[in-house]
Length: 146
Length: 146
Figure (tube, rainbow over the protein chains, first blue to last red):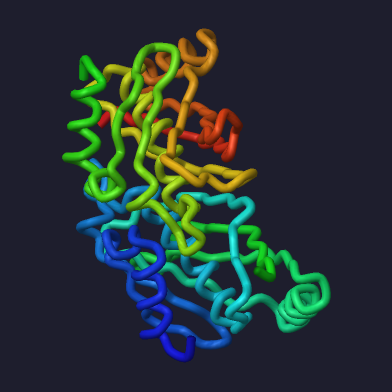
């Protein structure tokens, strides 16, 4: 995958719920990955973003960042566990931001993957709304050489 | 809401992602609530259930159980935080089970809601697959008198 468009196509083809959610890759580089989704298909009974959609978008931002950083076609990336805190309601479009881990941590992850065929890493993501952090997400992801 | 069919209609009308996911209310009584969803719209790149869909279904099972137990049309129920552990992949249809809290805990929740117009409760849910627990979910939900 060499571009945000490639990554978006991959998500839409491989995870159909991303099409229903209207997920788009807004930014994608080695420092961070940003996914967006419109409110309408992700709303709840209170006309704010559904907690499940917020969690899914944050999870996808972590998945996607790892795919992007690892650049390893034989890696299967899965999520092992996550914690999410909903601080404020999101009353408009959803925007999840996952920042790259520290260089040293990423280096360890790549080295473990190369040596053992398996590596684990924690990633944090936030959902921003109205210039504030509305949601905090932390996930543990595992990459396995297939 | 007086039946599983009422609850399912409510979910589909108020949270459009439940339609995309194919969520159905399989069981609904005062002891537990069971939601199901087919694998196809909820699959990931490994042909197993997407972590975001598993979390969304577990969250919905908690939401729905509270709506059912509270039977209070003026309650707004929201989720504050959750933790999820993905133990085993789900290779077929999704099935989330949320059990009612202990009678004493439910009584406290109802009393807080009646007295203060606000109440908080923790609920656990699991996703079962192939007669085993594939996913463990724990969420903190808040009901607010609107």
